[in-house]
Length: 231
Image (tube, rainbow, N blue to C red; front, side, top):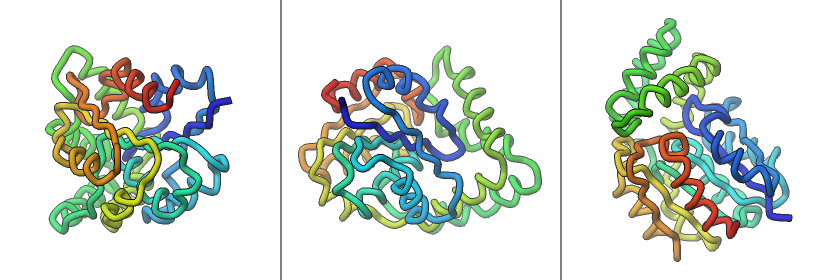
C-alpha cells in the first residue's frame, strides 16, 4: 500500500482546495486533510497536525499550508517521506505585511470577512481566464464557512511565523516545489529559492494558474504530484 498523503490547505480554505487531488489520489492511498484552524502560531498548528497524522506520510501544503508543512519538517522530519510545497514562502513575515494584517483583522471582526477576502484576492490570487469567477466564488464560500475567528487566528500565526530556510537546507526526501505562473502573492523567485535550498528538489511552474493551481489547473498539478509520489 502506498504511503498516506497529508494535505494542508491555505489561509481560510478547507478540503475543497484539494478536491481534484483528493479524488485523484484517494483511489490508491489514504488521504488525510489537516486541520489548521485551532491555534494561533505556526509551531502549534504543526504540532496538532503531527498529533493527528499517520506515523509516516507524504506531505503537501499550499500557501499557509506550505508554511505549516515546513514547520513539520523542522519538528519531525523523520516522519515525512516526501515533501511538496505549493505557492508558499519560506521566509518570516516582514514587518510591513504583519502590520497590514491588523486592519484586516479589525474589519473581519466587525463583520466584513468577505470584503477583506475579496479585496486581498483580486490583485494576488488567480490567473485570468474563464474559470476565474468560479474559483473565486468557491474560495469565498470556504472563507465564509470558516468564519472570522479562524481568520484572526490564522492571521496571527502568519504574523509570527519562523523563517524556514535552514529547515529546507536539511530536507533529504523527494521534494516538489510548484507554483502558478501568475502567482503575485508568492511569486516564482520564492519558489526558485526553495528549489535551490532543498537538495535535488523539482521545480514546476504551472501555466494558466495563479495562487491556487490545485483548483485553477488541477490536471497539471495532479500530473506533477503523480511524478512526485511515484504513482
